[in-house]
Length: 425
Ligand SMILES: [Mg+2]
Image (cartoon, rainbow, N blue to C red; front, side, top):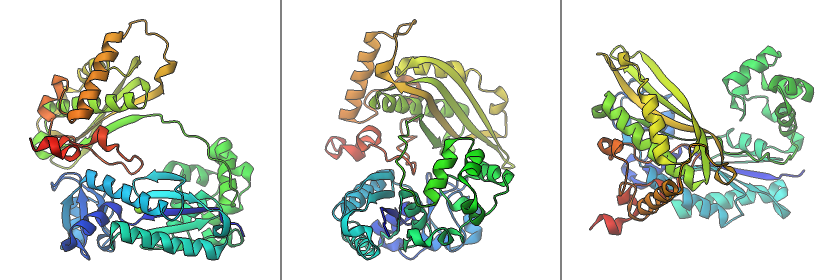
């Protein structure tokens, strides 16, 4: 039977990198935090911590209750990106990497002898060995092999850590029956609710459903695609167009006040604008979000957005941000409430080259200014030149890692990480 996809997913990635680089952490429950403070939550947990029920999103307080011995470490995004490149190179030394899906996931298309079970399994063992050699003995991964990428990824989730699972066409659909609906990529809480409305509450029912039923549940052709993938068809990927660029940041305790939240947002927006330009895109809407918490741990969010004359111009974006910030509710600064996390997102993106000329012309001079700032920041580190509103937050909001986005180190890393030669001077 033909196997077409092999999916590699590193186990407990951020925590494993820490354990690889700091041997004293090996074998211990480790929680990785964005900022070392008691009022945040884990962005990753080691395999040992997971055995205590600690996972991404578990608060520091709850993690301590679940496991008194847990060790917390602050995340080091730059080293996670460096390790990512080692992993990709290791897999590439065995088989071409078709696509990197996130910082710790990639997939490969199987060909030749590898489409048969024996060849695919041998290849998976070779990949694991190549990763251990290049990245270290703690860098375990789970490998899934299947008739298409969706099923290979599903298989990679079925055995952790250090798994190797093959789903062949002949195993379908029974091989999937032990899974929860939510374990399948593409089924989040809202999709699960829609499926339930169609009478589907288990994977077995999902597999037995017709393409027409799934089309109805998904309200469109995506349902038919899901049906095909679930049953082993190797259908072409739909090209996904990037629709947002954003950055968010958990505020360190000393930055949990209105002015610092403003400065950090200012800085995040400058980073997002630079990223937008590097993608050669413009945005038509700016969204800002501030998460606030009071001393009783009650959490509320303030978010607001504003339409933009499509732009990637930093000054135009900062002007729009200042308009938004004036709407920041005064009661959010009242005693007892403090901002915990902030984020900016640029949405409604389109390609800059399709831009029609603005009525309120963002002039050639502004484009040249942005290009010059980007060039200087790429050369000398991103704090070389910045707009003043971010001054109070220059050391805040360092590069953050999203699982789905591997940061470009040149664009997003801090000066000292990027140019050690310059930083020493
Ligand atoms: Mg993983």
